[in-house]
Image (cartoon, rainbow, N blue to C red; front, side, top):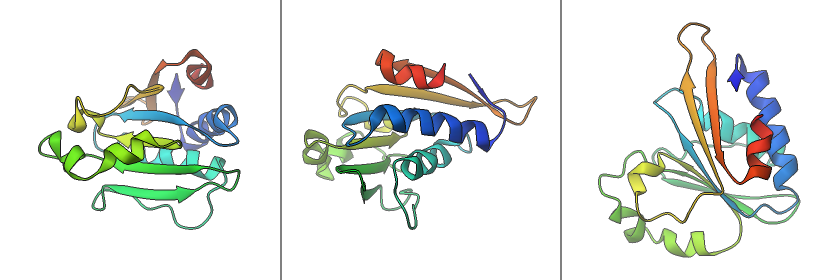
Length: 148
């Protein structure tokens, strides 16, 4: 799938939000290089799920929690700064992942072996020729369908 612009990414986020609502309980991994749009897509998805107010990048905090208006919670993780996957355990994230709710994980490879299996993996790459994005989705068939 291609996202030639942010409107296309927003359309995917809205389709995924409709599949996840009203109280999402899934682990979504976002893979891609710096600047690919992982945080942008996460913001679009959280907006589509009804989160209002500021949606911050968790680059320094590692995790930003959100309460969803339809019920449930979402947690946005950015593991980019992890130097060792054991930092995930040291940070106490096991309890968060054991509880119901949506978990959105940027740079999941930095927490390798610690995360539970993903319900959806998104691979977002820059398309140098068009300036847009190329997206591949893998995981639960119902969620992958949002990216067809």
